[in-house]
Image 1 (cartoon, helix red, strand yellow):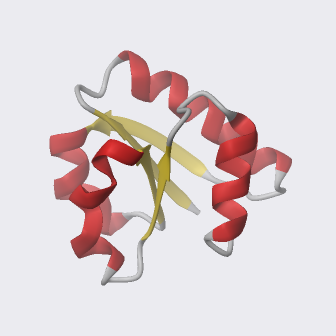
Image 2 (tube, rainbow, N blue to C red):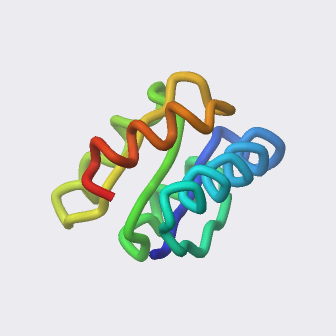
Length: 93
């Protein structure tokens, strides 16, 4: 599975989120290649991924790729492995 993690600038926050996403997916026995990036780059490249993870504030930016079958998960507490696992399960992963 290819996973894209996005934050506003693609630097610190998305890097920490990517680590938590890797941990959550590993806990769910899901093999994944996880990349982190900025919101602007993520909007342009998200169609090439199976899953996009971002804060709930940015989730609406990915409505177009949802229509293409990309799963999009909005996280309220971006460093919560438990929330990521819950949202991933709710998304059918």
